[in-house]
Length: 158
Image (tube, rainbow, N blue to C red; front, side, top):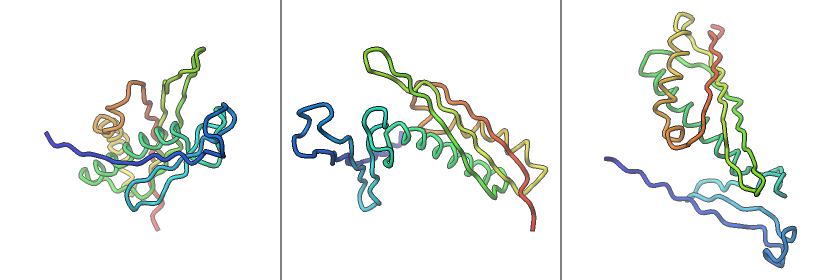
């Protein structure tokens, strides 16, 4: 079995002088670093005193699922002779918080909007989303449902 290892460094940058002495006495700011790649500025969700201008872990989870699905989908379209001209996905996720303050992501919805060059390949393009979902490494690693609601259209030819 082939293995791949991924390394990131999470570094808290929210100490404003007293560390975590009090609940409101520190920022939730942190950075995600991975080698020489650009640093991601992160925080917690604003509901948990995070900075709304930074990515939060829940958004990054939804983005990881959406990105993995997209990359598999583009691969499958290429090997099945479906030419994708445009792809976007306004994905969303739901996290439910429990009485004790814990919580879990309970559902993610991917809404890929795809334009293909071949008008006669729209149904094939739609069907490839199910296959992409089965192959997506991230989707296979989570324990909540992921709904895929694709919209496929033919791209305007110029």
